Image (cartoon, rainbow, N blue to C red; front, side):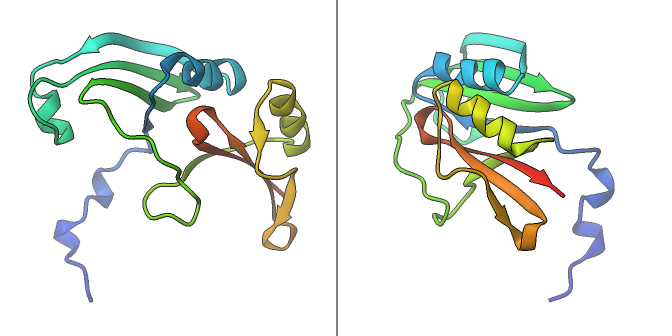
Length: 154
């Protein structure tokens, strides 16, 4: 099926900006992204319920959340803890439908593995070579079992 070039927004995209993550327990998530991955807080609003937020995110009026924007080298992680409505947490395997993980390229995945283990985080496996040796990866179990991939390319 041919796409209508006038319907595409390709020419309007400047760059990838952020990944949004909704968590039940805000502080462990903040510590993981800031203390382990090196993000810094660039915005923080507790009890955010600005006009239009509910409509923008497709939820009923009266939403209330803790919102924080984290930044590292121009890329952002947007953290949410929803007070109203309270979200549901369920297991999310890599084979499940929808977004499954966020990935960061690293210089040395073996060293990254040692450091995340020393910081008390688990990985699905030790560093593994994939794609015929072109990539070496670990999948870190971040707070609330969200997966963060650290990948080294050769």
